[in-house]
Length: 558
Image (cartoon, rainbow, N blue to C red; front, top):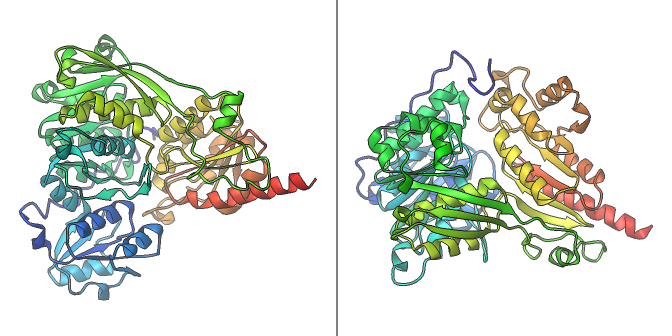
């Protein structure tokens, strides 16, 4: 088996979860009372909150409590912990996601009662139909790019502000603002909606956005699609359903393959962005590129922080016990800046000539320069003035769990990142290396799903090897069962590292809290620590900071 090409030669892509069961719904009142099975999921909780904001009676269930369920209860949405057939009563619509099996008691009971069953994507498709919309698809960068677009709209001002300000958004993650972190679901008064188009189960093919964005199409979720080609074919279907314009990144091989499959008409209404020149993109096989639809990222260079006095003033290190654990809310990592210059054609900027703009992003990495460029093009095509777009991007503080600064103790900084695909892990660690040259980088990684660990084992070890020291905690299974993947676990990555003679930097500790404490014990002032993964690895952060504080206290007593 070729890891980056196929999960199993016998796998065929599963069909879409269902046809759009709400295609004929013209009013939200037709839904009646809505019950969400698995309401605590990141995507499900967002949609439940949005329906609640629109006045739809909403309730739901989940297996366990979480910060998502606690938030929903805090805003008045009833949540039942535990899933049984008895939950399904006094409701007219039942919403499920691909993580919910067809034989679960609540699903069986909904069918017995002949209730309307709607997949999660059906709800989002219904919401997207109610407004002008931008849907962001891609293997990586969906949450950040969607959050950037929402932030740009939210910062609109002037005569046209009413059409853009207070946008609606459905984003599978929380968004940082100057007033704190806000949930990823919001129903606004503006005429635009921004949505993260999840491709994991193919359901994003149901969406009909005004503007579509493809950040990349590398390959993932092969447990569903079987092969990378079939995965990318789903993006081609997404393109066909975009109403007005498509925005696509030419730096990604997968996105270039999607371009190759596109019709001449779809190419003509597409806008392409790249760190390369248009000539270089054409040599890579992208035919029919239009110069007036091509946006080049001319330069992108992160301003590296130094160990100078000025930098110490930006980041006061906590050498004393009095300071204790640094709180990210009052100790922001504000010296990070990614400078990029973008060459914007007149057709994007609604002007008579090309325009070059320079943007200072507060989120680091070339990947975020690309994300910002996609957001710039999409919002410009929506009619936003270029100067306001730049202002909005420079105000963007980031999406939660994306290069999150969690605290600093005794000169040791801790970050958290949601990366779980090997490219995401490598991108994050590369950004850390650029941001902190010469520092020791230690990572606590939680592998995400058996299928991804099996399929991308080699690439994950490559990515983790960018760090100086690697702790691995127990694999986060999500919806998968260990019995379906015999022999696959976090130890699989250690075995791969042994084959390469680099196992010495890999430490396998099943309990993530203990793993975090061990990583803290091994650290020295100046080290950069991170917890990375798409599961609940962020729960280890308090243990790490507590252990670092104990070390600082012990050092001060000696």
